Length: 375
Ligand SMILES: [Mn+2]
Image 1 (cartoon, rainbow, N blue to C red):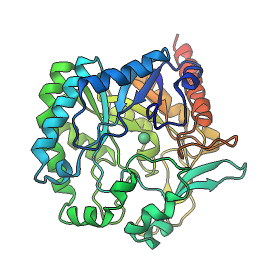
Image 2 (image 1 turned 60 degrees about the horizontal axis):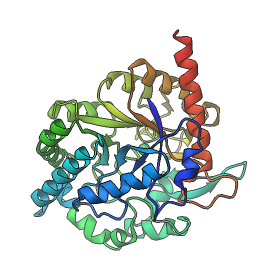
Image 3 (image 1 turned 30 degrees about the horizontal axis):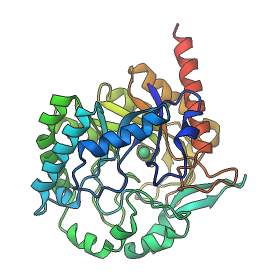
Image 4 (image 1 turned 180 degrees about the vertical axis):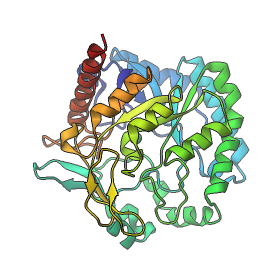
């Protein structure tokens, strides 16, 4: 594995590359052209410039998160083929610049959903959190307004104000899109891009839906092992792979994360590693859920918050997650995922410097211990 950190680019990130460069073991960043709209073409010159920005700080680009997928591609709309054509040319330009991993997602309307961006924990740290009752009580058109005040003046991926101004229209666009249609559109997209991925050895890594169940009636297709296997079989090419995000698959406590990792051997091209703490959860019939770690979760509408990376701070066994990645010989980029907001930092929620740096060191510590215990 290669430890990396996500960085949104010079103009957008509160965290500077020189700071990332001082995190032990981190020399690679996962970045993007943050001001590109989904469907736009990325020119080779723009990618060169991004590379130069990163190289200036003695670092390199380990992958792109994300090249976003347009709504026309997701719904099979009128501009689908034009946007796919731009996507293919973008991949070609990335390949020419020696970039070989691209993360993307196929979620309708909202990239991810949280009901709070700054829930205060006992130690004063603030974290992103999800409460099903709060989500159910809100009109999706008001979702943005309800969390916008906690964004610390940043623009969060998937929650761009221009996009959120069109939420009503977006819901309208997706009204006839069920899981099967969305899946068929994903397959159409993947089949179209596989030739260029093969030519330039670009590994596509789909990010799971977050949370791992339908929200606001919108379909979810990348949320459990069965569905990922279905996607990989539909386009059976090593370049059609996944981002294993423990915090997203893990929103469903019955997703056995280490087992999923083992079953996805060879197709995990990127890993997001973080921990969650479940406060309550239940099956649809109201019965109790036992998580993959054996924890009996208190019964109630789903409520979880993003813990720090340490196993003891949340519901996941992080050692087992990292060990599974080690055991399958995972050699791609890995990054700590969302961090808590600590030490008075003001940054994009989930994407401050301090707690992600702690996470990067902790994950590397686990990895070193596992590696040495195998000698
Ligand atoms: Mn993730």
